[in-house]
Image (cartoon, rainbow, N blue to C red; front, side):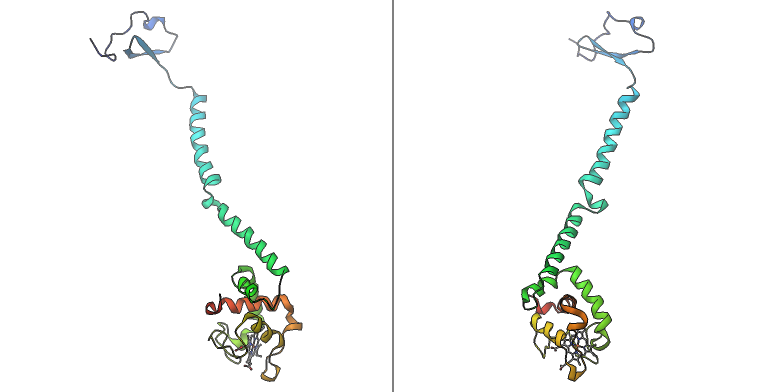
Length: 190
Ligand code: HEC
């Protein structure tokens, strides 16, 4: 017996029986013949449209790394929340809080601006010292705990030429500059 694909064309249907422009395929399988028609345009548009949409969806919605990923935006939000919480709970006797500030990008960048405007002239752009002592040499004559560094900045050393900053900068900005100084002293952080 012949294999299905090699069956003779069914005798029931002939080309003349078909509608205008419709072709019959040559093969016959188990007595079944197929039309040979182009796929309708609307069907093709939907097919390729859905494929195209799935690629865009994958890039934009699913894998956000191409347009600022979900993770990144979530992280920015979390860090903004952390900054608010830190800013509203500044306790200059709490060393752990200072270390947390020293890991917070907003505090560090605010602190850097304050440092460059008020402290760099004496302590150097890289905190390496100059007129004032180095703030990165690991030596802390007046205490290395964040709360002690805070007091150094707030009270200053008027007899040595460093003014007290507490009235000029206020608590929050001193905390920020201390956070910046701490961020440059990774050895201090716990
Ligand atoms: C006019 C110069 C001058 C300016 C401006 C200045 N400092 Fe100082 N600072 C000094 C000097 C001098 C000392 C050393 C005092 C001592 O050892 O008795 C010092 C000491 C310190 C100490 C203590 C260091 C230690 O070893 O314990 C810290 C912290 C500090 N400064 C931070 C700052 C910060 C932050 C600012 C900016 C808000 C600032 N200073 C601005 C001159 C200055």
